[in-house]
Length: 173
Image (cartoon, rainbow, N blue to C red; front, side, top):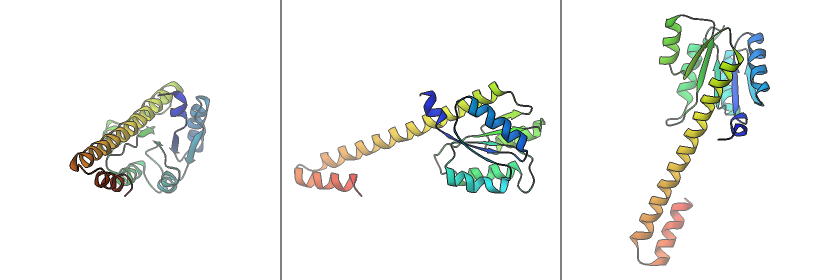
């Protein structure tokens, strides 16, 4: 997997503090990430996620209007079954309860502020790599299933015209 493939991914940054968003954006841009979507209003996070098709969400926990815990629930509820959409929690809440609650609520990783650029970038890279590998695996599985179905169709009839007609219906629903 090339670094360019990772850097082409869309990252959604959600934090009520503009300074934190600026810092995260600086970390990511310095490493070549260009598709960054940010909001300081957690109420806008889900619409932005859906609009931009984010590949990773960087999420603060304690925000006005909508907590990061609630937003995490919404993100998980909107993630299709079998899909892998990673969420990295970035919070100043260093309590074991916050970490346990976030991770059991569906977060994939957890970092405590203050943030260190190298650590953020390594976690982002690992989560995005996993997302892209998950997509590749799903595409390969779908292709294998299609080939198996095509094989069954071709083996089911000795008449080549019938087999080709059924194969065409399989390939072009």
